Image (spheres, one colour):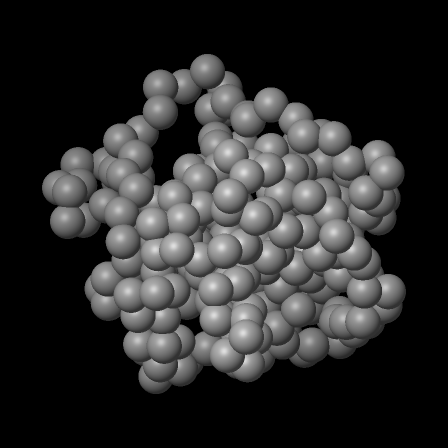
Length: 234
């Protein structure tokens, strides 16, 4: 899952997979200021931090949080595909083309909502606002016994990190999950993704386990941390 991304115009597609991670990390400012992303993940040292403030003291742009619609899919795909190719914030390895993105959206439906955050571009009307973050709920497992447990995903465009947008998304996913009478939300997070671990801790998720070296991506093995929030807990 979560939280690191770059502008839609940038693309890793022309680069070979063997060098993608090095080139992305060199060319893109994708580690948030003060992050310990490269230090590995440890539940023992994980402490929630206060929600970040907008950078540089600039007045925040007009921000809207709403349900995703089909017109948002190109931007959602651009955000997600960059993560697939350039980071370990998702363990997926294949980008989505437009058809695959539409299929993904169709699978979500009422019980597994997708939400977006938009910000106003210069001179944009409301319908022209730009999607800069999105999140979704997905089935945790296909077996019927797991029907009321969901898994969350949250992604924020890199140039918009540090303004609390991931928190807006996650809080809305929790609200919607409770309204839909889901019982719990599970987050599976690569252990080096400290920003995502802290985000989930701030929103009441508890560590419940670690899958040791269960995912191989971008030339290395990754531990996957598992966090859970039971929705009876407020």
